[in-house]
Image 1 (tube, one colour):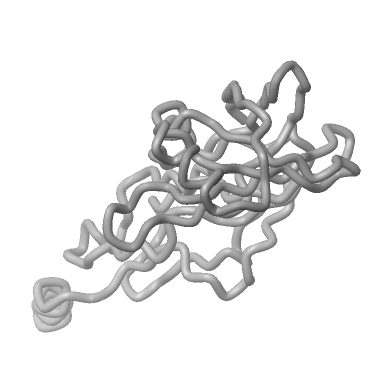
Image 2 (spheres, one colour):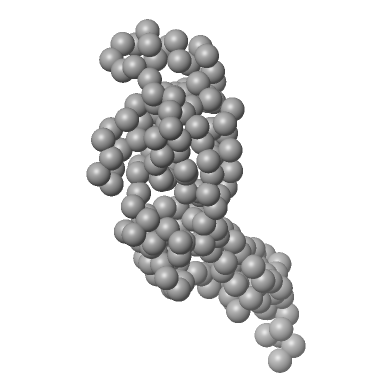
Length: 194
C-alpha cells in the first residue's frame, strides 16, 4: 500500500476563534487517535491534504506533527456543505504489527463474456473494505470479469485475496452484467436460427 508523508503542527483546542483562525490560514484542523496514541489535535496545510483526499487510492499516512512521528490511516473527513472544503479530519493511528481496516479501490480487468453478447456492465462499488497487516494490503483489488456471463454478478463474498480479509458485507454487489434490448434480440436470433 502506498505511503504518503504529511507534516502538521500542534494546535490549540477549545475556542471556535482558534479553529476559524486556522482555517483562515488555509489549514485544516485535524486530530489523531487510536493504537495507544494520546489524542493529538494538529493542523495541516489544505493543499497538502488534497494528495490524500482527492485520489481514488487509500494510503498509509506517515504524519510528522512538530517532530513527533505517527503512522495512521484517514478516518473521517468533514466537508463544508457549500464550498466543499475540508473542515476537520480524523486520523486513526495504526500499529504496523496489528491488522488495519481500510477501503481499497477495485480494479476491474478483462472483457466480460456477457458484454460481448451485448449486455451492459454495471459497477456497484468503487472500493471494498479490507483488513490485514499494513504491508499485505495492496494498492488496488484486481477483479477479472472475463468469465462473467449475461445476468451474472460478482459480490464481495465471492472474492478472496492472499494476506487480507474482505470485511465489506458479503452481499455487496461489486459488478454485474445486465441484459439489454440488444442482448435479448441477439439471444432471440440465436434461438430462432437453431
